[in-house]
Amino acid sequence: MNVGFCVSMTPRRLLCFAGKFNLQKIVSRMEALAAQRGCGIERREEDIAVHFCPEGDLVFHPDEEAQMLKGSADSSIAGPGFHAAAADFCNALAGEARLAAVYEPGDPYCERGDFEALRRAVFLPFLEELLTTIEIEGGRRSEAICFAWPDDWYMLANAPENHWYCPTGLFPCSVKALFDREPMAFLQDFFIWPNREKDTVYLRNLAMSDAWTRCAFHAGDPLCKEICRSLEKVAKEDPLLPFPRKLYLELCGIVGRTPVVPEEIPEDTRFESVGFRKFPLLAPIGNWEILIPGGFRREEQKDGAIRLVEPDRCIVASSAVCQVSPDEEEEFRTRMLGRRMSQHPDKVFMENVLLGPDCRAELFRVNDWEHPFLLECRKIEPGGNLLSIMFNFKTRSEYEWGLDILKTAHCRDAVEEV
Image (cartoon, rainbow, N blue to C red; front, side, top):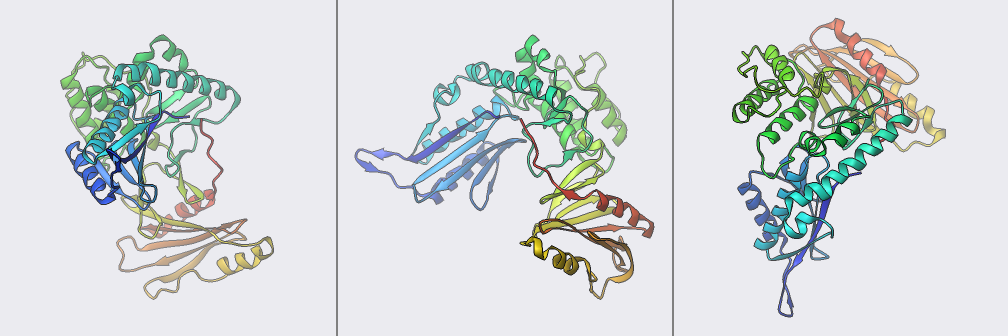
């Protein structure tokens, strides 16, 4: 379930002559427009993404053979402000690159630029349908429901029952009653960019989304200070907007910042606590997942491996699915687990700390590393699923921490979304 738009752009016809589709010039115009609007732009293998805000990407798929540029925007979390800004970008690109833009019918903003109709005729019905579906599904499931959650993000390990979560918060499945009482107020609070401009509501909601999804809530995370500064700016510019005081004071305490927001500003009391990364999380590693502390920072390496970093330790992991028939499973297991994993001269083998039918873990010391202890592991599940994982830490005794994480590794189930 989502809300957004799709657009197709083709060269304009001049009299009876078709225009030329020059992808290089189109991309050049796209980059110039992105710079003018303060947007990031990323050229990927098969598409081009223009980044307007968190959860707000306008993605273009060039098709030179069909002489067409297709675009799409998913506004399910970013909201109507992003939706309108992305459509404006498409219209500007079409004008500058001499393209004809054709949108899917029924969108009041794409068709006639009516922003208020977009919110009332598109986004409010979308929220009503979403919350109704979640209320029904919540009564059928014991586990929490996720919505608009990227496949490569962590998952909540112990989400409370009868709740659902998305990049803007954790909500009870019964939250539709709140929407029914004040639908437009709910829209304002739910979407990152609910209004036409990036106003103080946008700044507050963006800070809240960052606190929910990205902030590690420890002094070494620079995002703690960034969120404090953003919230202080919101309070100064719009003292009547409900303010997440509890979150602000918590972050000030973490970074040793003196609170400066006046107490008389109205309080945003929607959430008792904010922050998914305060708790253990299931981190995806390809088709595997492992249970880790929420404070780890995730980095993707050029070779496809995932690096999870804390100040004094890190995890580097990669996975593969090998083509193994049922008859070859035992031979594959022996080949992967029956021999020493590393023969590098800089690594001094210390001991086998775990040998089992489905995994192997070996402890090494690398003397010239800042964190000299290394636990290298492999784990296998049926179907040729192989996980390779390394834990790097300062003291030998911490290898049990790595083993505890290794024991949580398992192949991921398909994530159920609404």
